[in-house]
Amino acid sequence: MAECNVKTLQEVLRWASSFLREQINYTEEDSLVIAKRLICHVKDWSMSTLYCHLSDVYENYQEELLPYLKQLELGLPLQYVMGYEEFFGRNFMVSEATLIPRPETEELVQLALDYLAGKSSQQVVEIGVGTGCIIETLALECPDNLYLGVDLSAEALAIAEKNRQQFELTNLMLKESDVFSGVPVVTEGYDLVISNPPYISEDETSVMDQQVIDFEPHMALFAEEDGLLIYRQIAEQLESYLKPTGIALFEIGFQQGESVKQLFQKHTTKRHVEVVKDLAGLDRMIKVSEKKN
Image 1 (cartoon, rainbow, N blue to C red):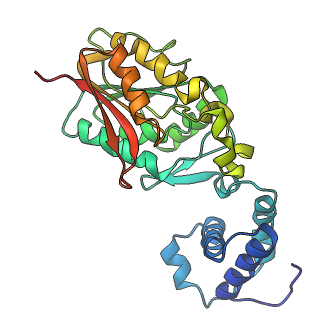
Image 2 (cartoon, rainbow, N blue to C red; image 1 turned 120 degrees about the vertical axis):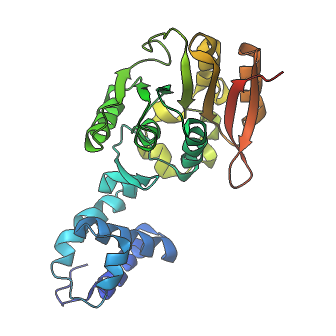
């Protein structure tokens, strides 16, 4: 890797991409994407700004990029190396105490935003906030409501609090809680309950990305009872917290639709429960709402 010659940004991109391919076995496409993201991170540039500087000389490129490349060589996900991930157009801080936000979860957020559109003074609670990307996006997009986010992990809550502070959110409270244990009961109930809980069965590790298993928090990934434990705990208590006219939204594994639906039908008999598909046509969300006559 030791090279002293002056390089343009375009040449540095090729150099970094080559390192990622040869040392970490990334594909050619992934190597180039990661190299671009790293340079944008180091330079605090947008991708469009990077393209404007491709012919410029990049001084000190090894000094700036090698520390990040070496962390990637150890197996760390890019998001943990940079310390953030983009979600719904904003950068959320992440750490190894939190899951890395996924694009699929943006669809859960959009479903919630569709419900909150045009409403105010709604009371919203998220079970298992992690980085805070779900509840904080809702609080930013629909600010005229009251938001509560809870998590069992104090370390995850610390990251969510940092994100709350960076977005200057005054309509959100964060609190430590095991499912609903620390959630106050409000008189009429919450208008929206939302969660992306742990839903992976321990039996699924053989088909998972090794990087996810090695670095992302198992507390936020895995659940007992074939991945259904947290859904059952939420379903058993949901009627005590959800307003009769409110809705509850949950992300699920793409093979869990019918199982999770049956759980909520068992414990919320007066409500309508449906499986919602994602943009790829896979079962991805559960919606619990008022049953219409």
